[in-house]
Image (cartoon, rainbow, N blue to C red; front, side, top):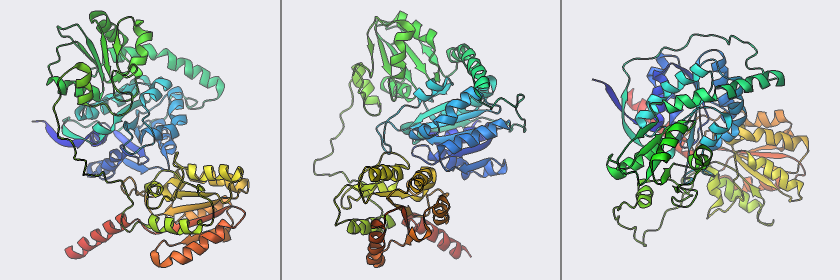
Length: 538
């Protein structure tokens, strides 16, 4: 009897990688991708197999580490959320040109409806841009099965593979049947051509032609993929294209018995011949896809549209937000269940900083230090501390991307906004704040940078911070004057002293860094509970 496990979509990918000869995974934590690396990091099976698991400084270094592992002939995976793929775009796109040696899968977890993100971007466009195959599972079982398939496909064509998974699949559980065999890890083997990864223009031009030359083969793989299928049915009044998790939503509405022809797409490039068949057989086409209307936009180039096409582009399905079974039911004219409405007396609870969070005390001190200046001077970015924008603190004025706190503060100071303050977390600082601070030091910018050092990557669950016990030395090494690297401890009893220090640095004409250092209350409580358990067991 086959073994089954109850797994999140993220965990299914992780387990699939362990079972498929993975040698290393590199990741930067970001919802909804974090649990992939966490599963491997906590797996005794992965440790027995000596599978390396690293939390990287950022997504770019993660992909580059995975490319290096692939260079050595081993199977590697890099994981991130969708906006992390922006950070990793340079190595990701160039890896398609260099090609690979050992199998390489890049996992991007998209976040439609922006549950914990700045945008809704669809990572499939990156895959199309890079000319690489894309795998988009429709359920947890496919998420598991696609990993070995993806590694095999990667090694067959010597090309990286992008796997795209949305929030609802990443963070929902289902029974997953585990294969009965384990694929051994690859042996160490360098590329046959030691100039393969050297993208000098003369080599890059040749490699790019090679990439273009395999596109027809990748299309044939999609046409014949077990993850893409044409399901014929009698009622040809409409034909339905459903990609990834949208296929699950469609099946849910019909209890698996759809009366119309359905084309399920979970592997890209999109299977043109199957598209043409559906178009030729049906009166109109409905397109359901989670995210942007990628398939819908490509239809015109494949079939030259003259029949009605209904999807996100024409507003038949809402352009904004997640897809769900109800939206598909409404589009198809299927009666939906009536649910109880939430009473008006129930007010939504906005997110807040944890009780006892060190950021709260830092923002209180910062607000008081700035009370004699006009508002709108504090730049920030991604982390728990972004909640400082909300009442009662209302302490920050920006959140654009990782590291922007430092460089936006520099730009505002360059424009004449003095003082100009950048507030950044410790993990975000090592992710992409260091380079911005180097800009500030080089041009002697009049900025005040506050690093909120809670000694962990708190927002995504407490992964290690690569700047732990190094932040002051990093700032000094970059060139910040040592007497303007100040360390404060954000506690109520230290409030007046912290206000004084911040005021002093606000008056300084140059680059100053204040490191506000106190451990995250959540990770501290966790450590104390674990310590108490150990003491009880002794």
